[in-house]
Length: 123
Image (tube, rainbow, N blue to C red; front, side):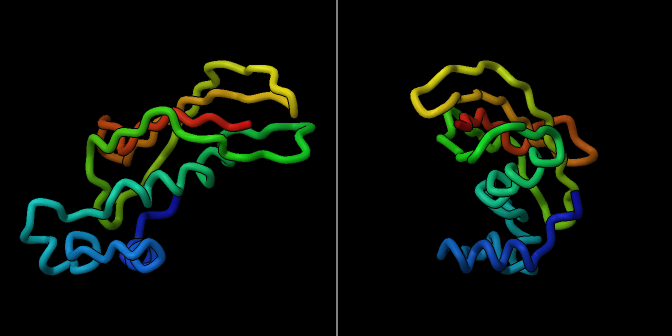
């Protein structure tokens, strides 16, 4: 995946209304404890990253049913290259199709620590 840019962070901050200086003021953030963007931007990139890992064939529609567990154990600084891995945990029959439980772990290049770790349910 291409590196995370300040423009992406600024756009996400504007869309969500979270324009804290730790996200949008690079100069101030560089001298503070949190010189990175919030994990919600990384989490929103999961759909893009997993589309490069796996596909679901024969489905009329895919929706994100929800998130079971999300943690943000490490920052994602501007310029980070993110990568995802996915593990199919379960497929459950449902009235309108089926629901797959997939564990997705996002990490950034150069570190072993996840950033974030999300267990996503998709139906």
